[in-house]
Amino acid sequence: MFTAFYTFAAGIAAPGSYSHYYRVLNLYFNMKKFILGLGLALMAGAAGAQTMGVKAGLNYTTLKGDDAKNYDYRPGYTAGLTSRYGFNELIGIQTEVLFTSKGYKNTYATNSIETEERLRLNYLDIPVLLHLQVSGLFFELGPQVSFLLKGKHIVEVSKGNTTTTNKSDVTDNPYPIDFGYAAGLGYRAPSGVGLGLRYNGGLKNIDDEGSFEGKERRNSSFQLTLSYVPGF
Image (cartoon, rainbow, N blue to C red):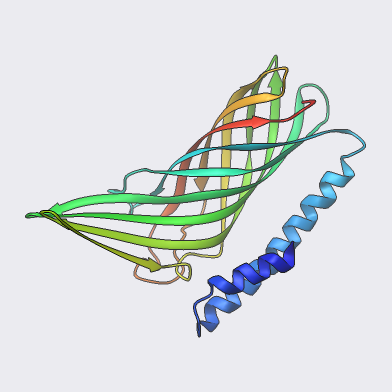
């Protein structure tokens, strides 16, 4: 698994970009530590009230902060694994490993020229949440660490019937690791099928390099997900 990730991570580093290659190596080793720690936690809970399942859904995502006031939300997606260790029928700890698409959209016009700007940031999210459940209703709250996998900036300029699209790789610009929090609620049926609504907020500015370095821009998104956790 880690070898495959290393191959993928090295592939997204721009040729000759030593700073990016160094960041990717750091990302790889940090991810390895987190995933190994998560695996040990799951194995430690296997003898207890441990349940595991899958989840997927839609993101409605943007950036927040003094330098992101005019940004709109853009649709994204999330998918991955979820695991809950229950201390009792009411309280448990829920951990997840989710591939999540984030970013924003910004549209503006000058004279007869309309411009749409989109930022796509793909992360591996690992939330660790306090999970409370009563009669199928559940509430969750806790911290989240996110590892940046890929960043792309897309600008579409339209004038009359002509549209020009420019795409650029901006994986180097954001910090490779983001910290935030997650809070949500939902309902899980006795069959194990659940519907959840969650808000994810960033606790730190995302920009490490590029034209937005030092600016106040943080990840912000709403998630609507379906999950299946047998024996929940």
